[in-house]
Amino acid sequence: MTCAIKIQCTLLALLFLASCLDSQNIGNRVTRSDDVKKEPQGGSIFKIRTTVFFFIYGFLVLFVFIGFLVWRLRRSKFQARNSKMHFENICQELDGSEDPVPESMKDAPINDKIDYLPYKRNYEIAKENLEKGPVLGHGMFGVVKKGYLKMADPKTEEEEKMKLEVAVKSVKNTYALDQISMLAAELRLMCAIGKFPNVLALVGAVTSELRKGHLLIVTEYIDRGDLLEYVRKHRHLFEDHLVPDKTEPGSYLTPLSAKRKTYDFKIEEGEKENAISQNLDSLTTSDLLSFGLQIANGMQYLSTIPLVHRDLALRNVLLKKNKTIRIADFGLARKYDDKTYYKQSSKDVPVPIRWMSPEAVHNMKFTQQSDVWSFGICLYELFTLGGLPYPTIENEDIYVYIQSGRRCLQPDHCHVELYDLMKLCWNAKPELRPTFTHIVEYFVEHMKKSAEHVYDYVEDMLRVEAESQRKLDDWIKVNRCEAFEVDLKSV
Image (cartoon, rainbow, N blue to C red; front, side, top):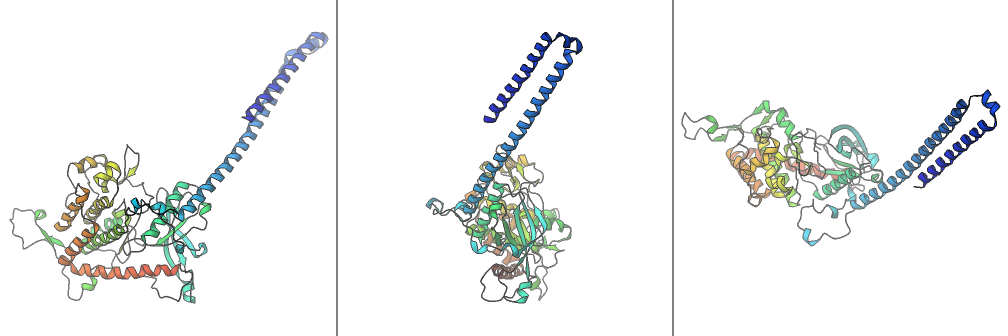
């Protein structure tokens, strides 16, 4: 406001000066008639006016430019103060609220209690111990890089040389406060989740430069990508052990697809310990059963915390080279750049509608029951070898389709008992869907009856994975008691 008044006053003064000069020039024309005859008056007036105009114009441009610089300086200072306040708030949020969790929220999922969850400082990693490598992947807001972690407190020369392969997650834009806040919330969520063989484990975090917008979440490095990509890539190699039941009476008019199917694994004596091939260029019915059971195990663990995943799908399940899986992407930040997501016009929020229960689609209400529905869709993805749910239905028609009572059809490679489990997960009434505890029990009973060798093998693998995750803590402990032995190939 002050700058505008100054500009107006200056402009008036300059115009007054130009008027005076013009008046003086007119007086000269009247009193000095001899000069009039000697010099044309029009040229002189034009020169004076042109000079005054450019003087005023140049002065105004300079004045506006200086005013703009002052405004930018004040604005940047204000933004810096504002950003500093926001970063201070995020730092305070890491410690969680000082207030106790309200009684009404005691049994609520930890997603709803995120404001009360603290960052556990024993997860802090010294920045100099972390080396970042190539980009593994990125979404709309975040980027994940491969990293190498040195041991915080090495006890031997061998330990000093060791480096653990990890995944390092950060935000794309360090000035985007909302993205940093979401990543900080995801960190606190992962601290609360802890470690379980079928859930992606937190190794640690770098929060020392959070006030500068730098926050790093360090997790296990899972080397074979997501499960959806794996089953799609190897579908042409699939070895199906689900065959028509020869003991079932039937007519020659009955199509093979309508006959009841049973497992035919043909396990040789002494081969039970190799129930699942470690060859990653293979895919069998045993693999599908193993993956399904492991996903159920991981979701059962998350349900006991309790945590609602909200986006359970094969694309969010990671695969290790020993064919164990990790459920991932249970944070608050979501990747919405996938074409299978659908943008609701009412809320303009992209959601994975093909994996969502009807109540979640209708009112965005996510619960453990909606996660159970999504688990049924995961089984459909598995036994169709990466097929798209409701392949003939457009995104905008899916809600009406499932509301009419129709569901995904039984996959060709799926046992009827597992399809019955899928249909239980897709009950229109959330309260009538099974819990993840019941799902695991159902799966275990099915496998013990039909593929016990696969079940035993999975149990043995998960015990090894649990021990491997336990050893992750030794990489960030500052005061370790003794050296430890670790097989880097299995970590």
